Image (tube, rainbow, N blue to C red; front, side, top):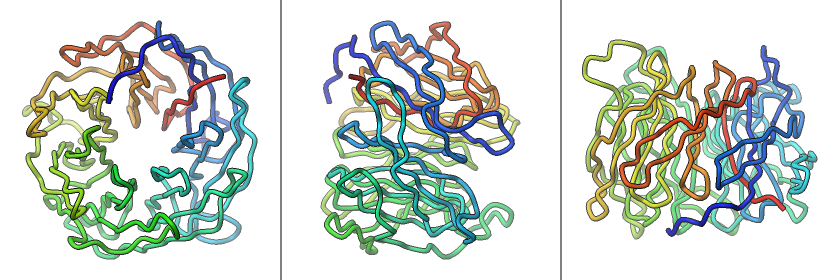
Length: 367
């Protein structure tokens, strides 16, 4: 995928935690893709624990999971839909519906822009929703409750769906379940929004890995998975015909002599397809970079870079591919880095923007 030229103005939305925090919801910024400059707009929309956010391909709507355990008296979280004012950055609440599982922690859209997909971490389930004509959401359409456990009796005694997204051709949906050590694979019905087991039904990880997030290569032939508990990155070959993931290699995200807490978080493939990045939380607070072999999909380590803050739960690469924005949750800031187009190295630009308990960052073209 070709990189866009710089200079376009973007809106940036930041999902946060509000419980026991000073945050009030979702915050907005303006982003200059030439300079990498972030300029605060302020609170865009009030919401309770809107941790992960995703923007509709049209740029008109934003969807945020409300990562809570009680919604309207039921043991469930919620998902909220907002209309985006692309001039002011303000968000207008359209509606809010149950995710039918507690602790929803991830939201994505299918390639058609007709469905929203949600992973319920505490509920151990995944769900889909129809996007209505006004951008609001239907009640749940597709729903799967995961079952099983894995080797860590504290963290893997039950399923914990942590990520869900569709394949590049929209025929399959993948769900990374930290509690099962599996990436579950579903046939995705992009008419009804239903999720049906694929054959093969999952890709299995080494016991105790704790798969968290997955990202596809722009060419659609490879996918990369970050495992939270083992702090490892796994490269897969992806069969678009079968919807299957075949492991190519698994690499550590931390030095061999590292003895601190292992708690990997986010993974992003550079839009050029040349690099993949993954973040370490715990006591490491770093982003590991890897070069991608364009023909094999395998990885070579390309550096480990401090995020200049504590607990980088999420980071994004701007649409031009020139800058990386790291959300340091416990430091309450976003740190901007410039990406070296040749080596993939990260260099801080010097800009640090304060935002309370940032969890997720997303871009939308401004008007």
